[in-house]
Length: 226
Ligand code: FES
Figure 1: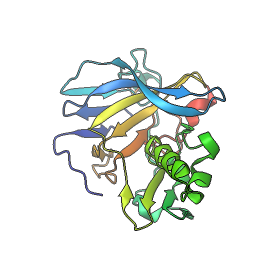
Figure 2 (figure 1 turned 90 degrees about the horizontal axis):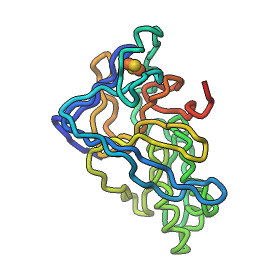
Figure 3 (figure 1 turned 120 degrees about the vertical axis):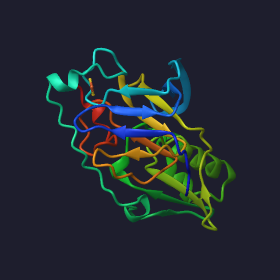
């Protein structure tokens, strides 16, 4: 999929913050759980003033969250980028094939948002996608996956993807009582510290706790506590 936002960009700074440029909206994005703690929907929380450029903390230690206050220098933050540079399609693990839908999966990108577990789970719902209700739930479970770990196609190979305007959501997980990653939506280019551009995608999550083993992307480590 090709998505262009020429002036919008997120720059990953060496052992430092993300520099966000291009008037990209920023707001808290809260996970709404069911009684089992499985995520069912998203709701928008605090909205931050839209600025031409701002710096978001990547080390997890700022006292001015979500913004960088230079604490990364005091703690000698190691923000080394370790994520694969391969495109998503080259990292896919075995696909889940159903009668109407095919779901692809790259586990390394999981941000543990748990939208894929409700109502039997995205895998079983994909396998049962000749049932209209299961099909609808499977697609929504994939659409709600902030990390873009899960990607859905129909049986003809057509990509099914939500339409997102470029924006950043600061994930809040009220069940685990932690702040999650930065949900990057709408194909905003992400530039590595070395100047290369990661594959441009509609949905990805960036680490903002500093603990991911798959930097700059989230791998769910924010749940580990400090
Ligand atoms: S990256 Fe600067 S304070 Fe966290």
